[in-house]
Image (cartoon, rainbow, N blue to C red; front, top):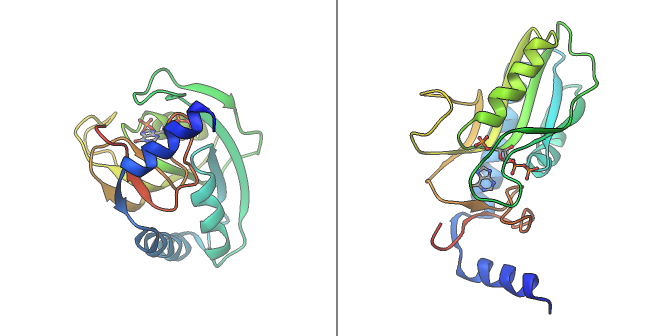
Length: 185
Ligand SMILES: O=P(O)(O)OC[C@H]1O[C@H](OP(=O)(O)OP(=O)(O)O)[C@H](O)[C@@H]1O
Ligand code: HPA
């Protein structure tokens, strides 16, 4: 087994499971119901924020009880690190969002820099209403704006470095079937 695989197996073996799979599934069902209730008549345009938003988007979409147009975009600022840097757009959306209600879906609102920048981009490109949905809101006082919240939040989780359900540690374990915290972080 190569070194990185051994390291990642050890990371999982030593991690704390903060939210188990059943609890995450319950949170996703509630998110889907809340999003459906609020947006079913607004013909929203959904954007999955790659890469982290992939799992939540994939599990939410089949639960949304209305016709959905889904697209993706990619903005990143953590790369292989555990602290965020300058936001880099890897792929800007091409879909016409003029006068549309837009829903941005991501795995985590940590400091919120990423979601704020994407929401600003959508408003600048004509979206009439921009909403955000995240699986996890990390609890700390380092938000990009005091009191910053997503419009739809699945779970509030303590201030640790997390992986699973889309969130990665050094590029690995987005596939972990729960929300885990790296030992010591
Ligand atoms: O609230 P913030 O502090 O801005 O952090 C949240 C963002 O960080 C992660 O993306 P990352 O930069 O790791 O890109 P990736 O999903 O492509 O790995 C995550 O998927 C969010 O998009
Ligand atoms: O805790 C985190 N884990 C993984 N990716 C992240 N991006 C922001 N915060 C995190």
